[in-house]
Length: 232
Image (cartoon, one colour):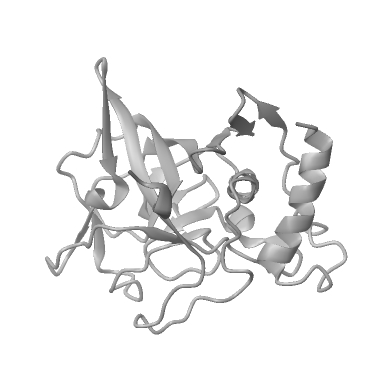
């Protein structure tokens, strides 16, 4: 793969996808330009974008995460150090822009700039993805669907199923996910790249960590995000 050519193509795609139109801003990264990602070919189907790995054939990506909390109000599942770390289950060193590039490389374009409706009965625009947390317990690899580590204060069950890749958006020249550090949100957040389609997404006080089975605080892990239709 020609890295420079790939980056240029992804930059153009990103402008169209998250801004709705490349005509809205001639220089959308002028205010807060993200770091230009290096795209490395690890093998025939596996590429690396910054610290994000992607498998084109399996249509999945993976990124490093650390378990950040196990109690208290929770609004996010994954943020960067710039995000609301006091309300997020996991924290990652991966850059949201690199994650966006990786999603585009597996042909996930998100919402095309459409906003998420506040009405919980309406569908969140974007593409369905499954999320899985993997970590080591001694020499054994453990894995679990990410939503299994989420519970509700009202004791209602958390429905097993996908999250939605809406892709964040551009505003005043900034890529909001990069600016705010918001990657996977439980509450409705147009700045986040992935949103929760479940009932209760409009309530910022309903979500809590499910401690049962959750790795210890500060445990290193890997978040795997896979296009839902490709889940086995």
